[in-house]
Image 1 (cartoon, rainbow, N blue to C red):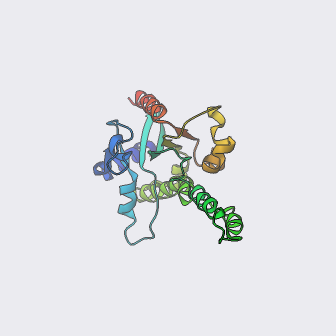
Image 2 (image 1 turned 90 degrees about the vertical axis):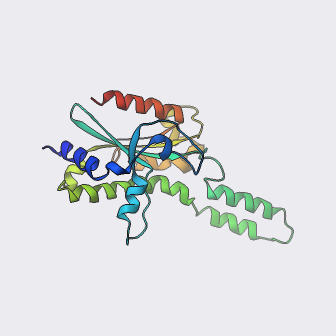
Amino acid sequence: MNTTEKIIRCLDEKFSNYKQPVTILSKTDENEFIVDDTEMFDWDDISKLYGENQEESSSVDAIYFSLKNNVLTIYLFEFKRLDLHSNFFNARKQLEDIINDLDKCVFCCCYPKQMRKVKSKLISKKIISLKTKPIESLILLHTILNEFGITSDEIVKIRKEYYIVSQTPMTGNKTNFHRQTKNKEIFGFIDKIKPFPFMEINHLTEQSFLSLLAEIKSEIP
């Protein structure tokens, strides 16, 4: 049995009970985001399974794999049912709103100016998680596959792709979307983890995600 077959077999056998349809994996509380019955590995649940008595870790929402011409590709998906430019997602924007309100207060003196200096050194935890979640998910994947006798050297060679799926509008040149001024704070990390460890990273809207998924599934024999 070659490495590819071992990886597919070990994941399917060990985590067959940890698969959920995209409809469930992309839900936020009771609100559906993407309605699709394609089953993927619920990596949040698998992470919790391995996180017992360990430091809490973060993970992507779902992992999926496909095999084409004997080349295995592992897809990592993070679902966000919101516009990532919203204040809810970006704590720095929330802080800026508070500082603007303080500016209107005659008793706040120089505090707004001082707070802006501090704000310039901060970044939203949720934004940071877009980069840390896929990395921690890969670390967990290494741990799991190592248990099945698959070496880290073999795992490194697997093609990996990471996608953030959200309601953030895609405008301008999609190839350089993450480099556009207004997107740099959120997606600027992409150039730091591509092409290694991820051969491809991108932001997807609901429709582009469904198109990608259809393309992936058409490749599966």
